[in-house]
Length: 377
Ligand SMILES: *Cc1c(COP(=O)(O)O)cnc(C)c1O
Image 1: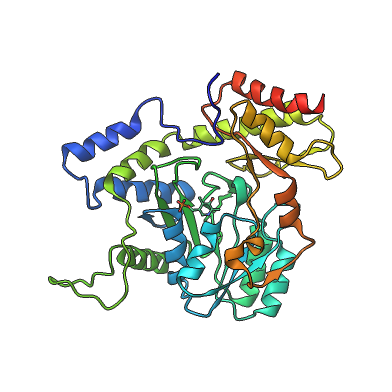
Image 2: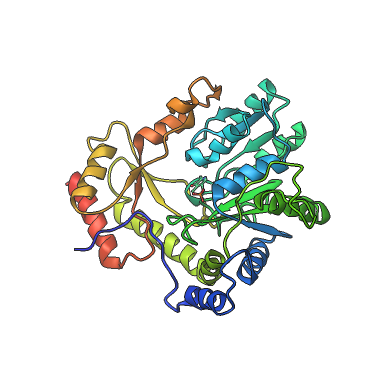
């Protein structure tokens, strides 16, 4: 029996990625930059409906440069979703800014608009707000944008997990001033490692900001024959080889979204009757990409999340707890946290991320559900 992964790279059956890489080899455009980078940026921007995009070395670097583009500086408050991966918040620390964590709600598992409002009342001069579309499930962007608009604070969407998610008829990552995507190996599409930043301001301004991001990402080299620097730069650009993988992956993105959604529907159908199990709140009028399928187990259920994870591990199946909230992370001890009934903590304590690998067969899904069902038998 083969090992079942949580989420692993899934290249196209057609070999599109290798064709783009071969073209880069044939023309010796291994680095720097090149046609694949330019085209990948255009393809992603046009897919999500943004005017321009910058291809970067990771989702983390995309978030970092979004913070810089939004004007976040040392000592500034940045309001962050509490329930997330640390990569959302680390770039805030790179800039020596101050993260303030905001709890989630049960309707979205993402940033609670009420708690955000409380945070902005307390920190009206916050320089940015960072909601996350966790597990591909969209945050309540309608209310978050309305609240942030009133306070005049820029929004940076961490859409690392939600490429392909449609909310209110638009792709996530295109509601805030900036949207950051990731192509890390476990994400819905991958370049082995990489990221992309889009800017959703008015077109001319957006193009200008993205150009600035590309400038910072290539060591902030001033346009001069010699090496001239007026600002601190970064080595954050995506290579032309990896962008070739990205272009190939874009061709199967819609297919991957459908596969991920089918996996989620399968779990709902075959585990939904188990007492005490509930699912992440995927709303019918939205198209969540269902990057990971996540369940919650009620506190009074005799089967505990750890029992599920251990049983799956013994069956050679990978699973994970839900992200540990940032306000509970030792590295962020001392940061302020705006509570909304301890939702993030509850989800961490009761949640299990089930394998959501798009290479899984129906037999694999049957095997996973069988292991879980036996715990309830
Ligand atoms: C993966 C991820 C990131 C970081 O992306 P990398 O490409 O791995 O740097 C940021 N935020 C969230 C929520 C993620 O899941």
